[in-house]
Amino acid sequence: MQSLTTEAIIIAQWQARECDRWVRFVSPHLGLTEGRAISALATKSKLGPHLLTYHSVRLTVISGRSSRRIIGARQSENLPDNSLPVVALWCAVLERLSPRQPKDEKLFDILKTLYSRINCETDRKSLSNEALLGLATLFAYFGFIPWSSPILKKPNLALIEEALFAIIERPMPAWEYFKKSEGFFRL
Image 1 (spheres, rainbow, N blue to C red):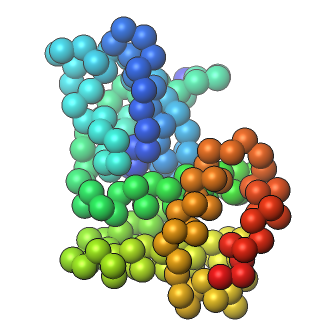
Image 2: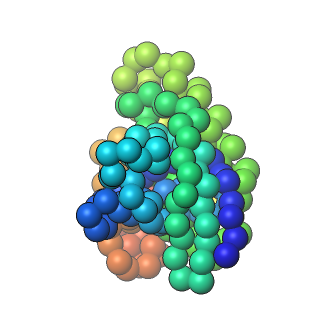
């Protein structure tokens, strides 16, 4: 078993047994993964209060042969609520689209820079455009859309959110989904 402490963004969590919790998170070292937090729901747990969805935390994880166990958590940075789902979706989608790529710490740094810039925005409309432009740039960086795509000039919130959720929720490979939704590339 190996122990690793890493920065992570918690995307989702659900109850496993009486006091245990499964946590899905994204980190620069492990990518998109899940881990089990033993006794996280117990009343005296020091772990549970720090495992908040859409929060940035420092997790200590033990990796076994087939599963991961979260043994420590500490809140590192509370991000603005309105940008968190977008940041988590970027991470999840990029990881889903390129699972065979080596885990790239530069990608995590790009995301951190983007959401710190978004944090300075007060207007919801400009926040959405900033977030969408960041997402489109990352898609182009990984080669999922061409750099000449009009989506990089004029982001469309509804279409991008629809594509994001579809990629995460559908079991089909990403390229099959994109073949079926060619309109996404013609924006």
